[in-house]
Image (tube, rainbow, N blue to C red):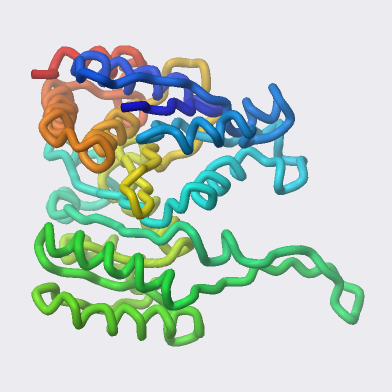
Length: 348
């Protein structure tokens, strides 16, 4: 089993290193690693955020453990050379269309949420986000209006097959959890969302055991703050999912706690924390590695078929928190390495 390690930029190398320490401690037979350059680090080294060698490694790997991309030094580059194009390129080239972002409050962190403790404690949801369409992949550019004004445009679009594929993922996830699926769109004003809603309803006929509801994205954002416990699985498009999953991260206490998996049809996956490269704290040992450690757990569960080891990682993180482990974002003073030490000490 080959795991590709793509640490990337900013705090990426620091947090990936801690996740690898945890994986190594599990001593799973047959796992090998190869490391590749992505993002700003790749651009500075070879002139492109996703070099051919990195893409070739990604295609050979059974799974990818990804740190983060983003470098202020690269903000003035042409868009196709910016660090973020690495993740978009991997999603496109590998067909990674289904992004799973769980959000669940660890009891020990309920008081770290911006929400009232009784509200935060009820959060246990999964956001299923489509990641191969929408405005991120639609036609885009800059042009002049007839009046000579500069105008930027990004086209939002989905075809029915894209919606159908992610809808099935949402229903299957809900079937494996509590049997409730909420489809989030903006069908009252967007034709793209009207197609989304129509296709999700069509797919629902295959899942009579799953209760389907629909919610406009603005209301969904409000409900995540007002009553997040009502949600089981949310299925939504690329842009709405990007925004709602970041909001959910703060509802559970810190963006440093949320892991994610992005899968293709063969369950090859890219696993990463949902936070960014945090260049302001890079190299200072302040980054919380737990989201990356939990992402490694998701990798074992979804791509490497090692659910027992995934359970061990999740239990170790919970135990470390119960024992008082807190990084800076959680109101503590423990360094990145010390948080890794705490998880290793709690690993049964």
